Amino acid sequence: MNASIRDLKANHLAATSDFRHAMRNLAGGVSVITVGRGDDISGMTVTSLSSLSVDPPTLIVSVNRQSSSWPLLRRDGVFGVNILAADQADVAERFAGKDGVKGLARFGTLARRTLLTGAPFLTGVLAAIDCEVEHVIERHSHAIVVGRILALEGGDGKGALAYWDGQYFDVKADADIAETQVPTAWALRGV
Image (tube, rainbow, N blue to C red):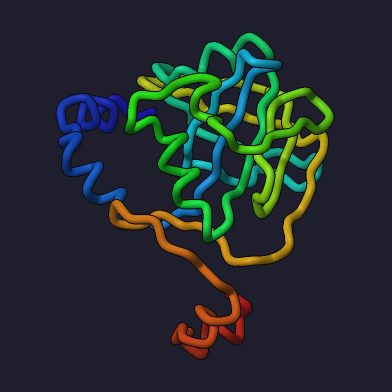
């Protein structure tokens, strides 16, 4: 990397508050990452989930290394991805940890089950994706976790939960697509 570019980056960092404000403009799907085994379980709400590869099926998620879920993810090397349905904003709030509840208490009375790895999964989600940790890249406060998908189950196709500008909202395919104005050039390219 060019030394002058490296110096520029080191001497000019964006303010944390400005970055946070800018990122609130990026809408994202809402998922709960679940970890642990038996009663030693926890979970966290994320919007930083993305597919990485179809062959082999892998995904990435950014995890705060200060979260109560991080030690369990590192210990067991497996995790569950629970893609939340439109009517699960209360579940997203519970696992966001805003009330200070951690570990098993985050699950409360929610029904849970396991798939292949033994990681806990919530019921009633749009999709459940069972992963083993393939690679971890630790940077700053977070870790980028690459997960190899070992098993998955799809939901019933009801609307998805999304997060934008500090609020949860539901995305229902039939209603939202009909109301969206897609530029003709994009529609022709299939974007």
